[in-house]
Amino acid sequence: MEENSNTFTVLPMSQRFSLKAGEKVEGDITVVNPVDAKEDFAYKAAVAPYGVIENEHADYTIDLVGTSSYTEIAKWIKIDNPTGTVKPNESKKIHFTINVPKNAPAGGQYAAIEISSDQKKEGNEGVNIQNVFEMASIIYGTVDGKTKHEGEILENNVPGFIVSPPATLGAMISNHGNVHEDASFVITVSDFFTGNVILPTEEDEGKYSEIVMPETTRYIEREINNLPALGVVKVNQTIYYNGNVSTVESNILICPIWFMILVLITLGAIIASVVHLIKKHHHKKPEVA
Image 1: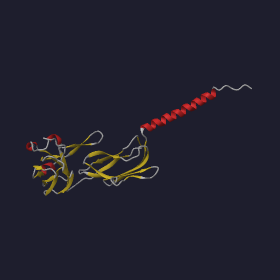
Image 2: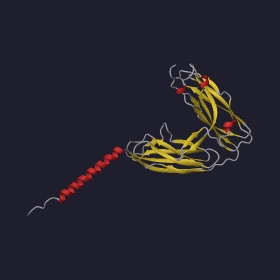
Image 3: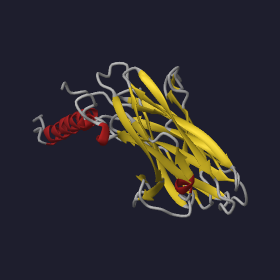
Image 4: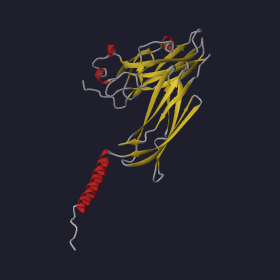
């Protein structure tokens, strides 16, 4: 069997649901087998709790194993068609139902619908399991009731110096509430000397948002490309979060190592020439009248 290097796609990658205790909510995701795939794709779908683990730098690592009061929704979701086959250049909807219990706690609830190759159905007609990756669609649920929205912008970081693009902008965001929050960013970049706008562009509006999970602190980074190899750019990063606004504007000097070495060599040569002239002047013999 010829190896199939294609992988499938799951759409949407995430979706949000407003839930009420005691109600039933329906949804679906779509599994797509690429147009250039050579084999049918036999899939299996399963529900997993979705959470994050914070490391020492406040970066998020996805956790699809650990459970908490925020992952109860994983028990509420039932998938109608957990297995199936998708032909090349075709797609199939996977339907699910969220049965919210009457005693559901208010606030955020999170789960992941994982899609992977169904090894039980793999064979000579199946896709090569070694070239298929597991994917997931994340469910962000909010149960009505007493929700707590608390959090703040702890850091808004724009560097003042880099040796080469891209420039990395950062922000530390805390969430002390019981539901996920959106942190929205607006970034503008222009050349310091000419005023030419670098960001936004036709492809990138300079706007994006990231989710901060409840009772966590997250460090969010964004790389800015299309910068000159040498020069100065003016950067403005504005963060909107939980009713708070933080704006930082900074000039970033972009100075590659080769240029710094060249400057040092030039300065060294100038200093050496000056020292040589001074020594030559001091050792010059006075003329005899």
